Length: 149
Image (cartoon, rainbow, N blue to C red; front, side, top):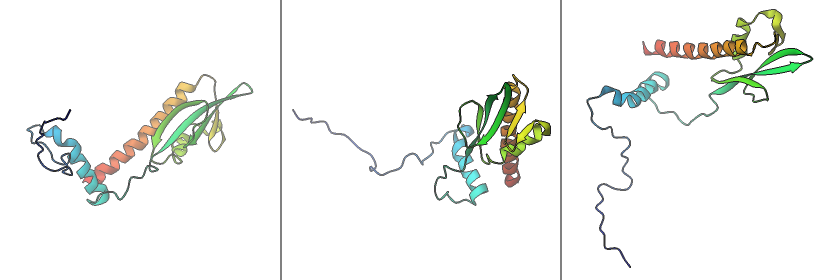
């Protein structure tokens, strides 16, 4: 059995409708489009990025280690190990250790990225790492505000 239904098509198959904005009185409707264009002007001088760089954002993590009855925490850029207690995105994950070092006293540091800390202090370490990740976000935001001026 064959179908005798005719379909009316408007335009052609290659027409890109997603680039056309619908007219509306709500200014928030254009936010995503305008924000992308504004950031492109600020950061790329109005040009489109050449290609997506998936390596531009890394991860920073803190892991918990228990050895000989002592509590250790290791801070690792781009590392997934067992015992991760907090992990977050960072543009400079290797530099995040320096931010953490500013918040933890020198006597706790065993080596470049490991500390020995009192037992049951996981929440405190999570809070410190979270603050450091937030500081990086604030620095980036302030830089974008500076570029916007």
